[in-house]
Length: 301
Image (cartoon, rainbow, N blue to C red; front, side):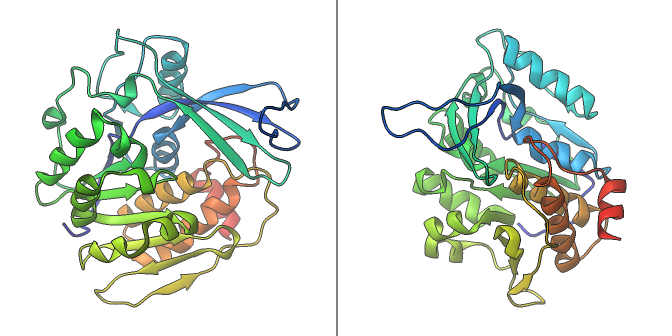
């Protein structure tokens, strides 16, 4: 499945709540540390959708969201970004959450507690109203969930032509079951991950389709872009900034990359734009700090 024209982004990736705390350092095993007051915002797949929506790309959320305070927060944040949700709130339970510990140098550490987003529930993925020009985003978290992962893989395997699959395997890349990994590698039009995740994935990446774009993000060093049709591997630098918080930087990169390709940019300038968006995002605290199109244009100018 190659990369075609993109007119809309649909995410089946899970959205959870991010419970963020600034800490002077991570606690030792069995120890404790005093952190800042916690802030709660939508996170996970929300950050990718928000980043793309702020660039002007229409977005739709097709995942589950709960009926408690975390679900309420997620729906409020989606509404603020103008992102429609395909499903009603699940009455089964609340959405999950992720504790995000941010150290003084901006590095972040996660602990995730899944909620209703980790299960298939009553939804039928085949009922998602796909249309030609849709980009479908899937994260590695969703592929690891025992109930949801196999269902998503089966659905991905049957995606029709004209749909561009975007995969970010995330920190749990090594935990994705082999059979599911094989399906998404074969179908992905865009595969984007950071350097650590690329090392964990290893030679499995060679199973990507020949037409796929492979992006490996490397923080301040920028990103490498590989593809076998029309160009070889290139390194695209990122603008220098002072990092405050790296939370959500990869998501900002992915969302802006999709939006840039949708706007007609070719892969190399699209990655350059995504690099700039991620750089700008890390200069602010919080998970969903991707810039608007106007702010990104001004930053790049």
